[in-house]
Length: 154
Image 1 (cartoon, rainbow, N blue to C red):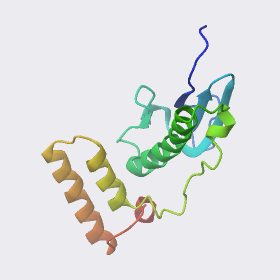
Image 2 (image 1 turned 90 degrees about the vertical axis):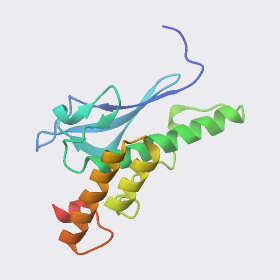
Image 3 (image 1 turned 180 degrees about the vertical axis):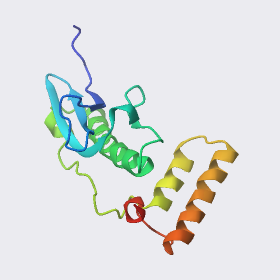
């Protein structure tokens, strides 16, 4: 196996660590002069995990919020990797995960913000954007709030 000159950062579902409710945890895995795994604090059913794209499928409850959390975790590790490589500094896998914590408070993960981020980041078709917007409006009417976390509705 060829030695990597740069760390690889992936999100994987650990199928050997089933939770009581039948879901499996998502881990961030960094390979570079060794292998480091750390739980992200997110679980989902095996059928809801898209290993190729490293996301939770839309059929899963709270998928947009959970994917945003996973994206934040991986993004922070990638930023640290890029910082070290740009400045030609040596690093280890554990250095990439320093200060990488999940925000469970929901401040960054309210439904409207997640929806707006998805619309901005992806090249969505106009009908998809319209569907997202309509979904938000219906949930807003139902909850009586402009900003809410999907867990509040469930």
